[in-house]
Image (tube, rainbow, N blue to C red; front, side, top):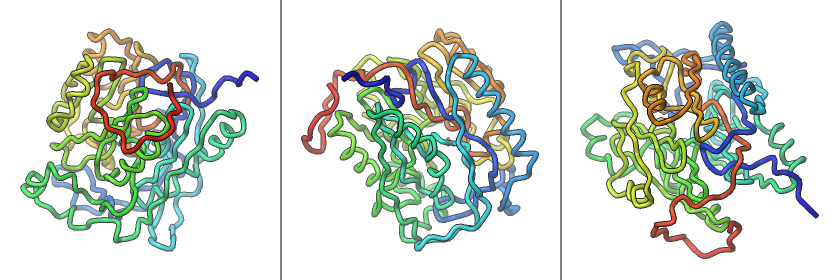
Length: 388
Ligand code: ABU
């Protein structure tokens, strides 16, 4: 019996896009301070005024939704099917057996929570308390894929406790010299005792998966991904960017745009040696230009770095959506042969990211390609192989 067309099918970050989820700002709250996160106002004095809590003002939500809706219109005009999550109440305090938090955050960045790896959707463990239940906004959609695509695999990664013991609180107090001294040890605000990863620390290259060790993904999380994905035929490669002292999510640091090309962050080089996988297989690593804003010039409540400039979304290996102010990057993309679609997105930044973060692709054309035939990959253990 022939199988119906796969609804869930996405192997990399660039194949022609068919179906995607774009976040919504409805019901968004300010992100609370918690052991895994210390939000600060973006002011030149480092933000000594307290960071607000509770629901965001309606006009701020409206502005972000206008820009998210603009992205939806662009994608639809390119023939892409777009879905939106349903934002639950986020303003009420949250209490589990292990922690409490005054409010949740938002459902603008599905990329952090959900990932498609071939025919599989994985819900990440997450690393912050205010985002513990964020997967709920996508469950209705996941059920529709589950009910209508018999080949789809749905995996929920183990939820960590997010108890105080899961975090290393002194991390936030380390002076810069201490961070510099420790920059190769990859110890951040989460310990190694529980499995922790945010989906946005993963970048997909066909059968190769690159995962950043960070404040939001620990070595146990990467180990879980290896043990889960290797038997399915994937190769999981941990990567590190030692000059990023507060790493969180790979998509402002290392952004593949087509076979053979990764955009790289000039201030966050790969750990020495880790570039070899790419260079030995003929990939080009191209530094992006400086963003148009400094970190201090980012929107007042934005917790991401100026490198949201490179958080672009691929519609295909030749078409890229880019934030409208980032002209230097647009010029580079143009020179590299891409058709660039600029959209305004700055009002979305304070909800956790830009164009890549605010989306989760569920279906792209294409299959499991091997872009890294030259490799000395050592799997954890031999298991049944599901890919060719
Ligand atoms: N959510 C992406 C943030 C990454 C960065 O601030 O560089």
